[in-house]
Image (cartoon, rainbow, N blue to C red; front, top):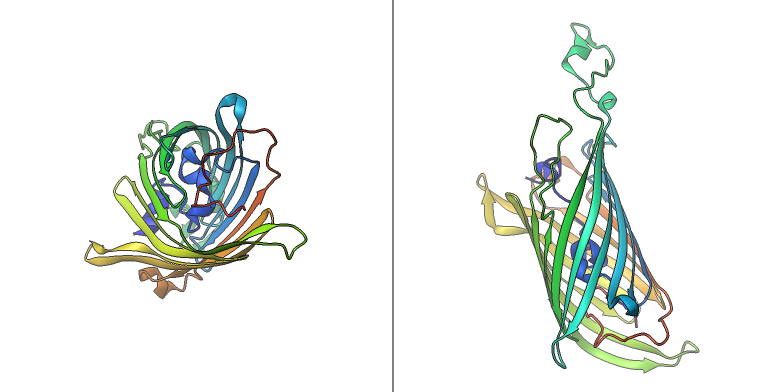
Length: 329
């Protein structure tokens, strides 16, 4: 099932979905109320020829004069040993509306420009073979090497100090995804739902590091469901912050759903990381549990580095801090 998921033009699937909040929902733009830079890398199925590698970078902040947050993000993805390359760059704006003493509503929009590139010289064609076998690549170009397209997305999020619930719609304009001018192949709109709850087990102020800091022990169950075209997927799990240590475990799949009589199980994800002052680093490993496990895929690896910079002076403070992806004290 997943082999067809990306080749049909669907989105990159990050296991650490909470670590790339801007990619999941434009409503997160500026939600940290300070400069935030995120660097993220995913390596998928590295033992297979059909491996993927995806890079992501983003910056965002809140600006009082704009009454909202601004973000810029970019992603680079190659499939099958860089035969097909996907690039995207996007800008986002989000605003926050306090509803009452407990809840706030965030709404955001995104405009992106995407382009896809294919290297036909790295493929083998029928005319490259004869009775003696493969004779070398003749490199016959069958379509355009590259195409560009605009992309629109929007999202909203309701949150309090302990819970959050978000809804986003991506590729609202369903842009065309094809290297051939006479072929129509629209990128399906993706709808995503994200939610979670933060249980604070223990929280206190420490003076042991020559400055005051908040020490927190918590449990955060999360859920992330996405539907794009005929494909849907569910991430369900739990991550925890134990002072500076971050750990997590969750499952990807929809076990009650079957495709061609086969149960939809994809992977189990393990996470470990740490935070120190304004730096957060996490690593996760996807253990393949689907039919692909028989092919010894090598699993998938993700690395995330998130940097928070000094809080702005004389800024409008958020009603409360988001409990979901923000580890900053």
